[in-house]
Image 1 (cartoon, rainbow, N blue to C red):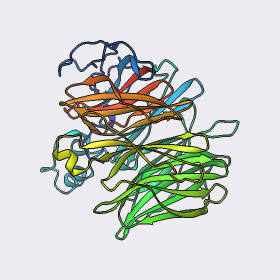
Image 2 (cartoon, one colour):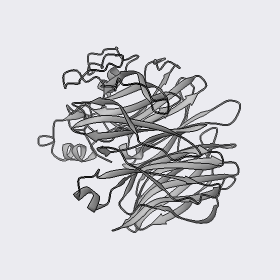
Image 3 (tube, rainbow, N blue to C red):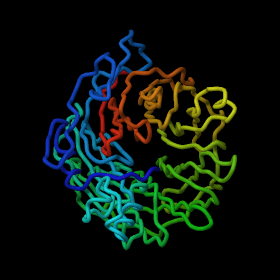
Image 4 (spheres, helix red, strand yellow):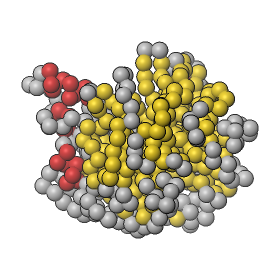
Length: 448
C-alpha cells in the first residue's frame, strides 16, 4: 500500500461536509453532482464517459455517477448495508516518513500535505458517514480518529442480535505502535463505544471483521523478523475483548488483505500471501466460532505465484466466492498482453477449492476488484487503460463462470491505482487521486 501525503484534519472535516455540493474555507471544492453523460473527458472536467450503446442485461450500466466529496487521499474504503440505509467508512493516507523528517528537521521537511505541513497532525483519519437508499448523505461525516495507521485498513460489520450493533475495526497508534481498535457505531455513524484490542510490540495491519452470535471477531496481521503472523480475537457487544487472542497462522513471507466470513459454528479467514520468489497465493484458515480454535491446517487454497492482491469475497450458499488481481506471466507481458489478470475461485463449506480457479481477462491493467453475490455474482474492476481510469463490470450466474467484462465509465486526469472499490446493494463507491495532492470519493448507481 502506498504512503502518500494528505491535507490537514481541518481540510478533511470541511471537504467531506454533508452532500457533494458543500463548501468550506479549508476544503478543496467538492466535485459537482452530475448525471452520467456519453461525452469525451478532459482534465478540466473530470466526468465519466459511459458507453452509450444498447444495454446488455447481464452487464452493468451507470444510471448516475457523482462526486461524493473531495479531500484527503483515501487509503481504504468499506461499505455496509444497514436496512434501507448505507454506512461508509474510510481511512486516509498519511506519510509517516515525511512526518518523521519534519520532527527531526522542520526546515528540510517536505511541504506537501498535512503530514509535512500540519504540526498538529499525528496520523491518518478514520471517517464514517451514513447515506440513505438514494446515496445521499444523511449527516456530516464523523471523524472516529485522527491517529490512525493508513495500511491498517477499515472493516465494517453489523451484529446478529436484535439491537443490530455495528462495529468498525481499524488500526490506530498507541505509544507510537499500531494497535487494533474496534468502535461501536449507531446506524447514523455516531461513536458509542471504543476499545483498543491489541498490545502488539511490532504493530498491526490489515484488519478483517465479521459478526457472530456473541458479538464480533476481528483478525489482523503482525510483522516480525521471521515473517508475518495472523491473529484473531472475539469482541463482545460492549467492544471489550472476550477471551485471549489466538495466533491463527504464521508465514515466512508477506501477507495482506485479511477477510473474515462467518459460517454457522465456523469462521473462514482468508488472506493473500507472498512466500518467496514464485511462491504464494490465497491462504485460508477455518476457526471454531465459540473459541477461535483452528480446524485443520491453515495454508494456501489457491496458488498465485506472481503476487495476488486486491482480494475481495462474498458468501455463496455455504461456500465463498473469492476474487483477486494477479500479475500475469512475464511471457504474456512481453508479448503485449495485460500485465495483470483477474482470478476467481469458489471455496466449498470446508474451505477447499474443488473446481480450480478461473482467469478473467480484461483490457489494460486491473488494480482491484469489488465483488457481491446473491442470486448472481456482480463484479466491478477498475482498470488503467490508455492513461485513463476505466471501470469494467460483469455479472454471472452461480452455475456459470463469467464472460468478458464490459467498460461502463472512464476518467482522465486521475490516478489509476488504489481505488478501493466497494459494492453496496446497487451502489458502487470508489476512491480516486486527482494528481494534485487530493482525493475524491465517487458514487455510482448501477443497473445490472
